[in-house]
Length: 153
Image (tube, rainbow, N blue to C red):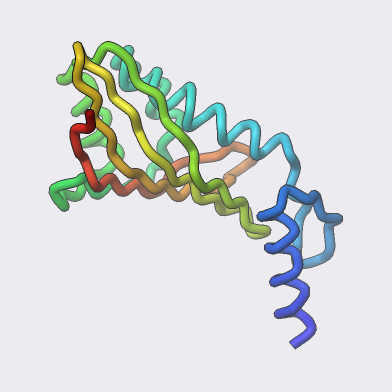
């Protein structure tokens, strides 16, 4: 029971942005990881799609990556890399607004938020959730889900 409360307290502190000290079961979560994950989702990931950069996207996605798109279709890393090779970015600008970024003590992170796409005078938004794991010191995306694509005024 004490372990449960220790984990619950650690997760509460992490969600408030408080750094915790390492224990045997809880590795140190560094502010650096939060900055790396923000950069990954807000800068590198959009850049890979915008520039059709399969090398960059390949470095972001884990080999076990799977995606569920807004239509419910599943794809894997190889399919996603093929897709960006064949599809140039049709929008004028894009930014991703992170609404939730949780880093768990086991080296797993969730990045969730809203994508904002601008083309001509049209704005489209979508919701996205991503699961990212830290492997050999590098964050790798293993799952993505996109939903709620809509045009807004």
